[in-house]
Image (cartoon, rainbow, N blue to C red; front, side, top):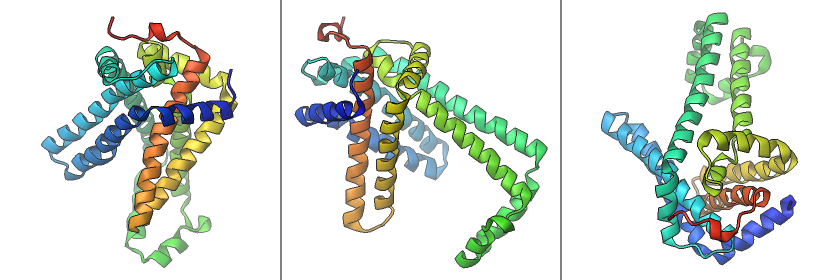
Length: 269
């Protein structure tokens, strides 16, 4: 079992040696961070369908991307054929698992909202929130002092914190499910269970890698939010690097846990 530093170093070296591994990341970013939000902004049915298509396409591309990574991790030479074969072989698993994931996230939100509406009520939250938006910035900051926030609003915040905590825990447990589905050829149900087990076995490593991953993404977002051309470009570059690098890192951990001979990676059979 490699330690975290070895995993990170091995991933960095493979990415340096194999430029083709960077290409799918650009397509995924274009689909999920540009076309998907753009479709949602317009709100019309054709645009919403376009946004849905972009999200599904990004999910399908992940299957091909992990197939490229599998080939490289197992000592093979990655080609565009591996990318296409990965999509053809595993796209249904990726789409099904992703759909169930978002249904679960939405169900948790619906349950917490239902509980909050029944036990606290929505009117106190709206009565506080709507006037808050109309205040100047300085008065908004003063109104957000903990001592000035109504008890009902604090209870809603606590419920939101519970939902966020559940989402974070779920994401941690499922961080390896996609590479498991491709590298090990598992159904999404088995991949979910395998990911949870792997996360718990390597909890310290997952926390260390996850902290670096989240930190890099947050820093990239901060740079992009500066609206300074050079800083925005640096933020976009860091975001692209983080997406590709840590996607490969999670695949590397899976391969380190369950190494497979390169001869067994051919998805064309």
